Length: 228
Length: 293
Image (cartoon, rainbow over all chains, first blue to last red):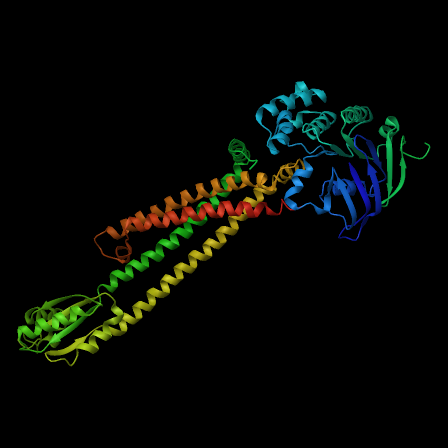
């Protein structure tokens, strides 16, 4: 589903983000991408979304080699990938329902599909009764649930989450990760970039650790740090 | 195309309403700038009109020798009219010319004149006053013609002045148009910058660039159109003011600048088209850099 082969990336400022990174993620896997700030986690996510292009190496996402996609096909690649962010990135003047429905409108889904799918996914994330609230009226955890609903409403093949619990307290974080786990059980490949040790340790899923742009660990049922 | 009409209409309407201050700013910018452009264009046309009117007042006088037979006068008259740049000729008798001379000259100077010594003349109106010299050259020295007079240097000077004046107004209009475009572009860009978050979210969830662009362009089109309509109305208003100023019995420069309403409407139409194009293209251009990558 996701494959990186000897990928390297240096930003124009001279910062080396990734060095010769190779990794393979199968369909339906749940993977934690861990590492300290600046280890290259976010760069991996940006490369998968084709927000950046690699300097070297090859990247496949959902059967496409990303670097070879022409510019006009990039939106179609992104429709296969749901995205969750630390800062939620909701549109502040649209209601919860509209924020989620927006995705389906953007990709041209008919109205009746929107009318049936949006309430369904809002129920899944437990916000069925807040559909008319504005993001500003919700707590951080609730906002992130809207973010997840938005990422998942289109039933993407892959769900990428960049520090999804970065702004949340431990208890709320746990709820968010459980939600991601539920989504994973529907067959969606989930990649979570995080440095939140508690959620990684609790889930005991595959852990890939990056340090200064190289992979230093790939463990099937891992924890955040070595043996701790 | 994924962007359906309903989506674009709803999105445009809500965007315009949400950013109403920005909308008002953009519309007013277009209105003020294009009013100035339209006014400059109108003044340029006014000067052109005044020039044409004034040029119709340029005459060539062909003075005839005393005692020339009527038949010969007729021949000269017909030959004059055959020239392509002669519009019309009027025959003026000795008595008429004598009276005119008395009006133009001081009593001292006109003392030596009498109705019988003053020559009769043909006063010709030209289509193209620049050809006055050619007429003079062809007819002076012809049997029966005493002399040909025309305001040579004056024609030349006036033509140059009006040509410069028209250029000045045209250049002013172009400069105003350029600065208006920059102002409008900047306003639209500010409006889009305020919504770059929305644009980035749209891109992330897989919206095509055209899908993002179309509502913005439609918004720009509406803003450009509303501003331009205001500008067009003020151009028409200016025309009415000029007309009123020129209408007073005292004939002044404004009287000569009066022009048919058709031309004013054409200028207004040009202003509206400019507003539409600048609004739409400006939006497309302003959003370009938010759509990269």
